[in-house]
Length: 476
Image (cartoon, rainbow, N blue to C red; front, side, top):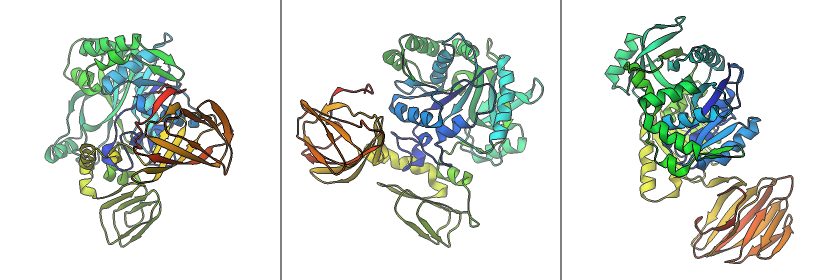
């Protein structure tokens, strides 16, 4: 039995701002340990059975960062690109098509990229149990054993025992309840939190979509047929997928199974007690991180005095907290968040305000990742901007031109290959060159070590949209 890990990497994680940004969301961040949440998701299934290479379904925006993170793990896998977000049911349908490309019909292990599971051994045990049931034709989900009347999660009610008794038939799915209802679910003992984890054979999922949402299945099929394989990326037809209705796995299929709709496979739930969290907000992250005797979590350059149950996280500058309880303080290069732990769900409202005001802090970090490396805007003024640029070995920026700015490049380390107009030349450490306004140019790293340089831009307009690309090896 072959298990195909499918990692759904959608969502922007706005409640974890300012660390999580729309263009670099929480699943790409190392919030727990050295791995990003996405890398940890891939890594936790190692040893759970016979595994295919991981498959990630994601927005095109994140494709190069995700490819790099998988490469660093030695897990190249495949990356299915969604031209636009259409929720989890279409994403899983594309994954099912991709899993059957070579005539296979594996059991899909569907995992959100942004969850935390602390007990990998316990998780792998239920995966093996779920795989056996999924291979027989069931759609399996995992219910998190609740320890509190949580109002932020959906719930699954377990019905009669299924198979050998480890699993139960799904009686119903319940949306996020109020506090009193959540307490009644906890007291009943038959309800679990909806984890968003599923196991199902590819052919079973496609058949279920044909019964429940034939319109989504048809749109995904059209988009799949219009797609192509581009290296590790699997691209689908952009226009066809744009016409696909948006729906979740729960609404599209699982709730219909629970309601007894005819023609559908059995839906079953297996309890999971493995230190699970969806880290949906800062208070949830505080819950899963190691704490000192006063309940504090301190990461980075942090000093705490007479503080309790506080999360303080610094990416650079010193954070000093005195006499604060139940607070979250997060520092990044361009933003600082201070919020009471009871109000962390409202951080999203700050992000909404940033968007309305047209500010970049809701979308981008000061440090921006590109397929060739990254840049950090270290200073700016009315007619200038200073960037620190790092280009990976072999990395190549696009052949481009700017209408409104000139650029000065100073190489700090490594060697730059520069195209400027009709000439091509090398610039070594402690050397510099100048790109006049309106001149076609390109920057490359021909060496085996990173190229680090300082770029000074000057001109009347310095926005990133003042780029005219003529050639680009990354297909942007």
